[in-house]
Length: 387
Ligand SMILES: Cc1cc2nc3c(=O)[nH]c(=O)nc-3n(C[C@H](O)[C@H](O)[C@H](O)COP(=O)(O)OP(=O)(O)OC[C@H]3O[C@@H](n4cnc5c(N)ncnc54)[C@H](O)[C@@H]3O)c2cc1C
Image (cartoon, rainbow, N blue to C red; front, side, top):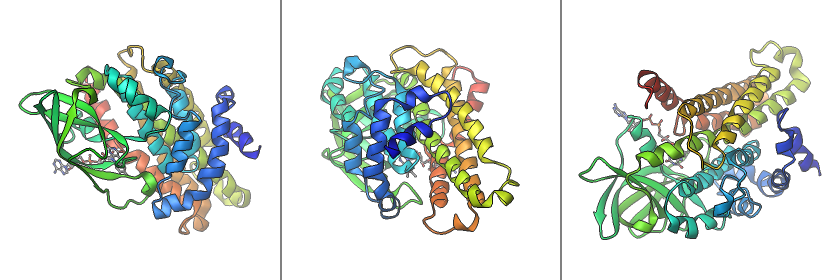
């Protein structure tokens, strides 16, 4: 009962109807029982919360943004983001792998590949199969930041893939994940879904991180990995990228906003004993909270517009999505810094709640599209509105 109330209380003003959604109330129980007791193990020992992921899938957490015609709940990505928000209040690492799972489903539902829609999508949206996304590299490539890392050579009724992507989260041998590749001797690209255990694919260690250790982030080395036409999301993929981009970018704000909410709670907690001195700090709980409400208002409106991705986006939607994602990164950095400054020395202890928030906040700001990438996109749009 206590955790049910929590889901309602932590939801910003004006969004109470969303908080009373049965799925968020159930999720709150599952978080309390199966995630909260393992936070330290996930963060410090890098334990991957596999059982929790399957539970989130069972209660419908991955099917909210998928149309009913494809077996989803058809509620739109706002609800996917709210699932992430609830989880991110406790653990951004776990909320991020929920994003990985749902964005992989986003690619498939927005593709024209009936095989993936019929045979792979149902497993991902129910959590029966887990899934990731290795599209940071193509996203950065299309923004002129780095070279494409994977090549595709036409072979039989498919392609042979070669290359390396250094970090793909929520990946294992029995997980699916999305990759992007340049087709050799052409100016075209493809995007495809591969299985982590495919022949020729090696999953290495992604190294150790200051947070996100429990995200099963692996390096993926592809040596002559064959993908047949049934696994191709799109080729060529220019239009496909434009279609998935707004949902890809906006849905990431889910794990950012959840983190901000939890920082506000921590600031208020610190103020119970230290308000007399904390009141001199620049970013007060009320300031962050007001900005969080405004961000929610803007972001949920954009999410409602994107819905399940079935409609064509209006021309300036992407720009507003990029601005909203940038705003989220900036707010996360402010909120986590303020939580540390409010907590003082008690927050500076190893494994304190606020030091975890600081480490998680930097991830929100560096994962693709990173804060600098978002600023580059906005600058490019300024120079050439068609970008
Ligand atoms: C914990 C964690 C989990 C992640 N999970 C995923 C995931 O699930 N999926 C995914 O796709 N990605 C994932 N990533 C990758 C992430 O999204 C970013 O793409 C990654 O952090 C690299 O971005 P960056 O901003 O550091 O690169 P940038 O700093 O923007 O660097 C861009 C490129 O410039 C190159 N470069 C360096 N010096 C020069 C130079 N002098 N001239 C030209 N180029 C140069 C670099 O090699 C790099 O490729 C993850 C990263 C982390 C840390």
